[in-house]
Image (cartoon, rainbow, N blue to C red):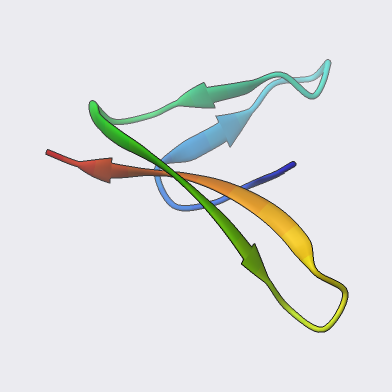
Length: 41
């Protein structure tokens, strides 16, 4: 997974939320990359 809007990535590639909200999984781009975003509630 790649970090989307409202998501940060740690040194060990751990994804974490920067804002409080609802998680959204998306597939974008020509290579079908999967993104995790947090939409502020």
